[in-house]
Length: 268
Image (cartoon, rainbow, N blue to C red; front, side):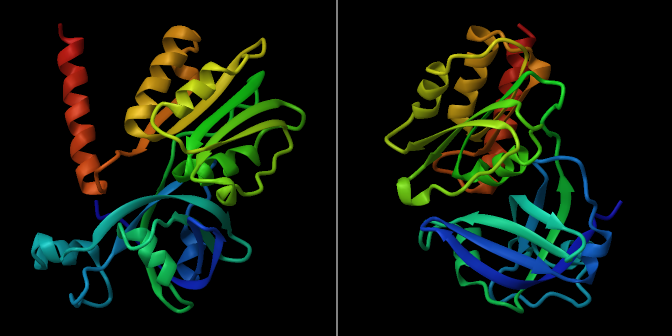
């Protein structure tokens, strides 16, 4: 079945911290954009290759049939920060580190009227309202999902959030009806998130945990929560959003390699 592409127009942009740009897009096609229950709702954004003319109306299947692989749009995965069906607005926050990468520089230079094409949404996590408390852990790339999750924590329920950013200037307001303990980490090196989680005194009761960020660090955090904290697998949402030193194409290869290693390990 053909994958549905939603075509939107940039309405406005905002630099919300030194390393994060917010893009708000709109368009009539948002009327059929699914308003799912997931707080880690993500989309696959299609970035055109410079200099390539795509047939109109845009049809991804036609593009893939008619154009060589190197001319096809590049795909990047981003979490939806907010979706307002009443206003027909979709908000996506992009981490921006200068001219490196693809999506960040695009967001930094985006202007009202620019086209934004995306597929989705997908998603798998939302805070369990029956949990006794919640743990949310991640870096800049996970802030949109963490912020969306915080908004859904039931009133008064304890939630401990640990967020890693470059510096104090990259901190941003995070609100929740829950009883929030928010810990900002200013990046000093690898393993920082793991040490912070190890330092948390877990309250009594069942925790529902969301841990997303750099793949290698997330892998260690998953091991810690499963083995040292005895958190059941079904109470964990753990995923690497990116891999240090790789773009998204390279990260997909890394995930495939990791999956094969796990299969081999399980077969021993």
